[in-house]
Amino acid sequence: EVQVVESGGGSVKAGGSLTLSCAVSAYPGSVNCMGWFRQAPGKQREGVASIHYPIGDNTYIAYSDSVKGRFTASQDNSKNTVYLQMNNLKPEDTAMYYCAAAFVGPQYRLTWYKEGHYKAWGQGTQVTVSS
Image (cartoon, rainbow, N blue to C red; front, side, top):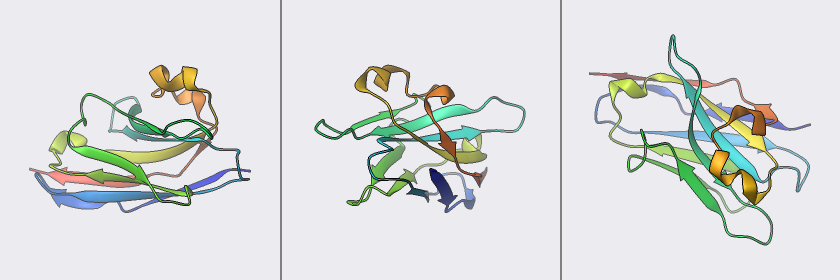
């Protein structure tokens, strides 16, 4: 069973920064991709970033256009925790942020934002950005 737990949300003013963490518990080798998603009130959940780290291949990190250049996804050496560093936050970044785990091949890199790829989701952590 794969378990995912997010932490690090909070309230900041526009221009501020937050770092989200996501701890994943899974059988070794059963997860090779972690995604960050968010859902604002009244809107559909959207992909924010993804880290794909298949064994024997390069790590691939993708971002949505709305956060590119402001958010940075990373993972620790043991690959059981991923992070989302969020800088220059804007009020439109206000949302519940979710972390999700997947095991996918490289052909999924172009569609990393699709929720159907991910098999385990966390409960979410709230990020609120005030103007």
